[in-house]
Image (cartoon, rainbow, N blue to C red; front, side, top):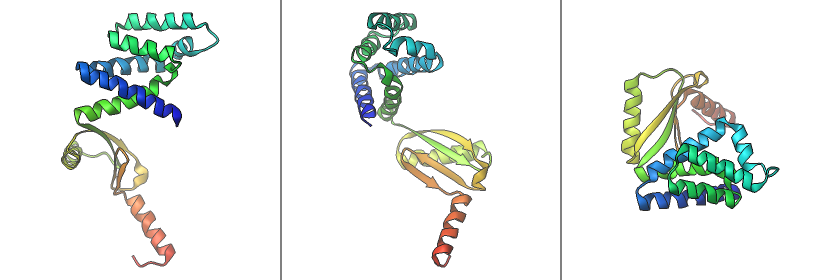
Length: 183
């Protein structure tokens, strides 16, 4: 829990710098790119984070990666600060928080739509538009299929879950019958 609070603070600080200098989207792309690279190249993460190697050597590896990726000066300083403070291993969490904060800054909300069957694109667009109107934000919708739902859809936006699946309705009906309530 403490690690998430730390990651959140670093992400918030980077976003504030991005708001101030108008480069929030640049930092978003740079942070996402580096995090993706480290996720794919596990050896790179070990070379930078493993305390068995000397600190100066690990810092030089990070500097070489920053130089090769041609990252902005602010991102360069940010990543070296993370390294110097022993927080570089939080990079993935910092990236997740930064992405959320940058979305909020742009008025974007990410949602997921889970359906039992593949939905026509017009239906998905109607749902996206309705969610956008309801939240007042532009919605990026991730559409998935789950045949176990039987029918209906489940929509998730942040912590809000709208469950209109047949599976859930049948479960609720069964629970009501167990309690002796009329349906």
